[in-house]
Image: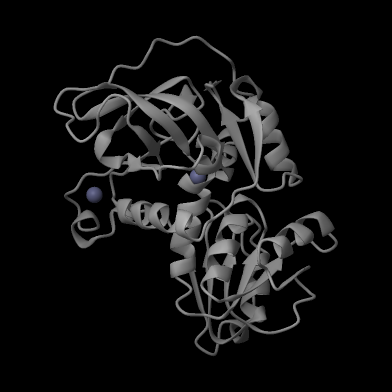
Length: 325
Ligand SMILES: [Zn+2]
Ligand SMILES: [Zn+2]
């Protein structure tokens, strides 16, 4: 499924099989999660994607061929291909354990072709090992929604009263992790969105409701929804010393707000991308909790419908494209 131009539907197309270059593997895709970032790319909200582009950055597949010099993976290995597709290894961020900020980083489904396809290629060093015993379908949403959400959760320190703003794919995973850690989760949805609120309570949230209905002050908030007006709202909802973490790659403009909302050592920060270590840690942790993903399946050729349903806000949990049986 090919994106020819932003703001146009993906097109089903036959393209030549990608060949693994040095250090790469070819991966036969079995499932690919549909991420909000895919939506931002398709909707033209992220600058300069590779074009034409194959979207998809939560890829579960099996190694089909190994390129020259690749020696960690074997044909038949099941792997996950996440958003972080390549880093330079040389810049000051790479050399200080912050490859998520690499100045030359390349991202899957953005600058590199991703998993809305039967076959893709990836640098073997950035493929993630997957836990045995979980299905392709269950694992796909962990690869971006899960592990970038997990990075955002770590930025909340040991906060007990945690607000999750926007209860989509990422929040539905992180809610389970946070509850397992003994935190009290407050799920903030659109006012009156009872389906999402019920869903959140079923996954361990102590409370779910609209942004103006929070029963207590928070110690931390993660904003998953791409709505800038939630930033001052979340700061106001936090007690002094609290932190607000913006977990998405794109957000509408943040309205101006009084300094008093930030005062009291409240912090506001974003989380960008992931490191390979985040991926490995989270994929080890998830089956121990165990994280249960709520998935709606679509055939690959229905990628546009999956994106539309994600855009509408009605989707519960994660959308996953099934590519091969
Ligand atoms: Zn770098
Ligand atoms: Zn993503």
